[in-house]
Amino acid sequence: MEIAKSLEMLGFSQRESKVYVSLLDLGPTTTSKLIRETGIASSKIYDVLEKLQHKGLVTYIIAKNKKEFHAADPDKIFNLIKEKEDIMKSILPSLKQRYKKTKDEVIAEIYKDKEGIKDIFED
Image (cartoon, rainbow, N blue to C red; front, side, top):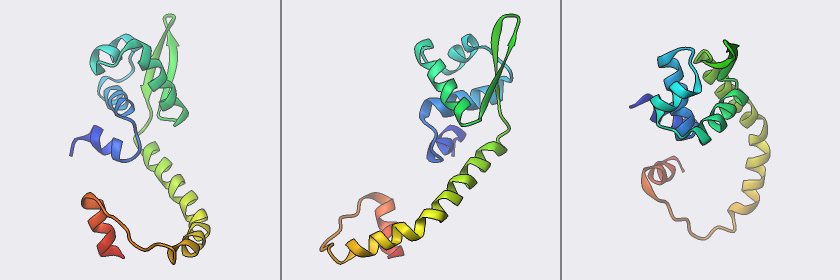
């Protein structure tokens, strides 16, 4: 599976995955090079970089009066997923309790695609 698609499955937007993978390939770079590499419009590239910065996956330095963007270590993605897993574990009992209250009211369920079939077999 393509790396960008895998990142999208982990919660990245299509643009975020393109930019992050490009930063890994290019190394430290400017927005103009990122725009050429990714094909993302200049009006959108700054938003994408800001979102990746908030996730802790992109940093920048100012060199020669220009921002130079750097990709963070890919291990950071794994750490973000672990944090989300910990949050999910903490709220799961409460969610299950609420689910049990509504389970008796469901008369029929409709499943769609491969994920729906997986759900049927898991139930």
